[in-house]
Length: 476
Image (cartoon, rainbow, N blue to C red; front, side, top):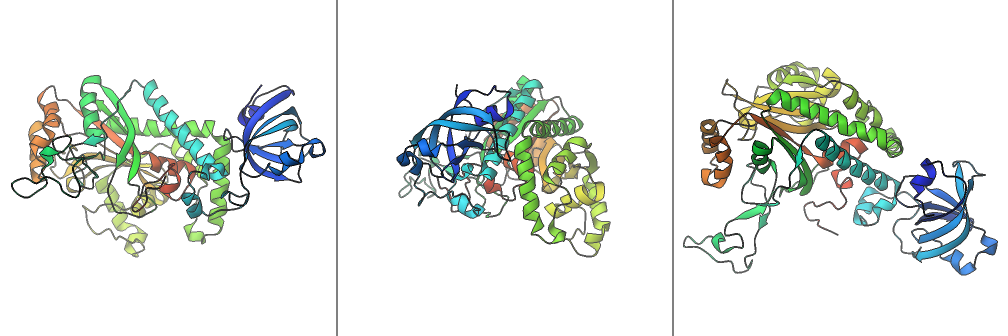
């Protein structure tokens, strides 16, 4: 019977003849194959009877080669593994030239592995990261399914800018060299494929709101795009977003939902991805040993995840947070890169991390932000200065979740759109929700890759998505 390596190592399989397929990690002493099939971070040792194996076959057992092995599962004589396979026959399914195969059994830089992203999951680090990414995806769908949410596929091509940021990729079928022009000399998008100017979406939130206001509880989990020319370790041009929207739920309910959701999905990987997390935890500790003491994390990777799962999130108003930051030592001694001087400042990652890691020592939810630093669709508070927004802050990363109670009052929403020069005709359908059966409703957004970064301890967002899309890079 054919098994995966994960099955062989975790299930109580009677010692018996078995078959297995995988890729050679190493082949030493013309006898010992370390085989991996992607089902687990662990290899299984396959022992070849080289004296009775054709020389031409032995020469083809090279790093990266795909093989089909038949043999007897036996207790291992060596250290480091409980079982091994005594090979009775080996078939080379796919050769791998040892002189040109990029993923050799040695340390490679992450930059080199990004250039070989089609093969980097053959390394322990990236196979562990991508298995965790898969588990987190499953945990997200599982959570929403078990809590009465409906999964909604929002459009990837849109005519609206949900964030009002304007950093969007245009979608057009017009002749780039000779586009049709209107009477004003501008590109005539009425002649384009959709008859109007369209872009790749930055968010599925606005469309999700429309479904929440009929189905009650919905969520989106799909690709989003931002044409922001940021070549940093935290920005991608294409990334995945999780966005639940719930009718009849206020900001307090939104905070409850977000906290329960985050604890649930991270708890899932603690339970189901133990070996991958232990490997990534050790990798991170090895990396941090080389850093100055001041730059090292106070918690290990697994401790950080447990810190979120096991602690109640502290809820703090933006106004209270500003007072804390204004009066804290790093601010007074000008240790922050961005000094907090007055109410209304947009908090940076260093401020968010201080609140979580130093001041409160638990995950933090900030709420009631100044209206002028938040999006138009957030509900205006009675003070006229703040909106019912909330951000969840995590250790080591800062903002993880951003959400709000949505503005359900038609007149207030129209005023806010007018102040920001957002044409009513562009979002007529969004305004209709406030005309026909409006009600309190709320939701939040979570950048999936940021969650994967937190759960894996990876320091660059390019290393937690299969094929990163960044400025000047759309390889593979």
